[in-house]
Length: 234
Image 1: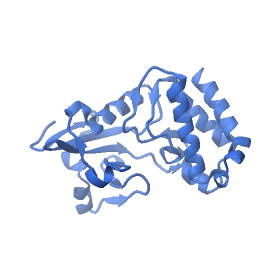
Image 2: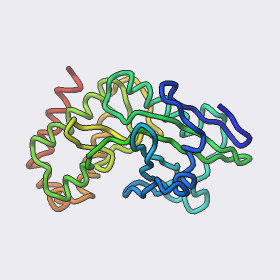
Image 3: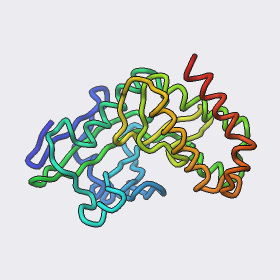
Image 4: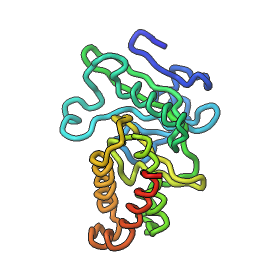
C-alpha cells in the first residue's frame, strides 16, 4: 500500500491502519508508553487485538551523528523495514520463536528515507540482560539460550546484533528479537561463530559474573556452547 510519502506492508490476516505506524498518533490517543532498551524510538502501543511494539529505525555508531534516523534510498525492497518485515514473516512460517510482524513502512525523503516496524508484543517477558542483572544466569538458562541460538543457526538465520537485550524469556520459552539487517544464508561455522562471539561479549558487557571472562568460561559458557552444538547439528 502506498501514500504520498512512501509505502507500507501489513499482515493480510490482521487489518491495519496506516496510522498504526505513527508513534505520534498513538501518543495523541494516550495509548503509547516508552519501552526501555534499543536505540530509542521504541514504544509499546495498545493496538486492537493486543499490545504491539512500534520501533522507529535509528542509526547507531558514528553515522548517527549526521544521519540520525535517515537511510540512503536504494529502492523499496532495500529498505530496512521491508526487509525485516519479510524476514520475520519467513521465520514465523518456519516455526522459529520471533515476534509476529504486523506492519512496516518507509517514508521517502529525497535521497533518504525513514522507517518503522510494528510487531506483536511478547507478553510477560524479560530480556536475558534483565535475568543477568538479577543474577539468574545459571547452567539451565545458558543451555536454553544455546539451544535457541542453535535452532536459528541450523535454519541459516544470521542475526546482525545477537546480544543479551535481544533474547526474551517468558513462561512459553525463549525468543529472539530485532532482525534489522538479519538475513538467511547458508549455514557456515564462520558467521555462526561470529554470532556466538558477539553474544559472549554482550553477556560480559551487561555484567555476567561481574564481567569476568574467566568466571564466565569456567561456569555457564561451556554449557551454552554444548547446547548450541547439539541444537545446530540436530
